[in-house]
Image: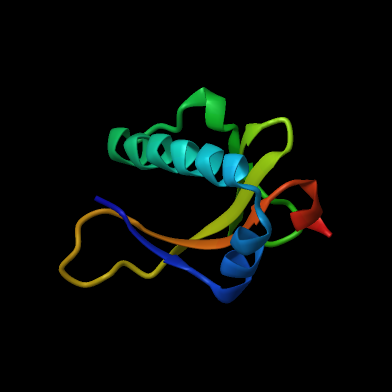
Length: 95
């Protein structure tokens, strides 16, 4: 099971989301966790490298639903990768 660590910017983005956007992200996050366990990302998540920042990835799940994340240092004693959530929201997270 992967571990997660949202940064302060992620929480700031989260507070600005509407309830339906939060629910959509949580559904995408659950599919993301399942995908990590299976070793391949579900195609509906559209995961790819984020070109502007080395080591950062973009995950989109809706026409205007996206998150930026990176692999962090594994947590000792915990199986699976460690994910650092950087931003969540709409296209505005790229500004």
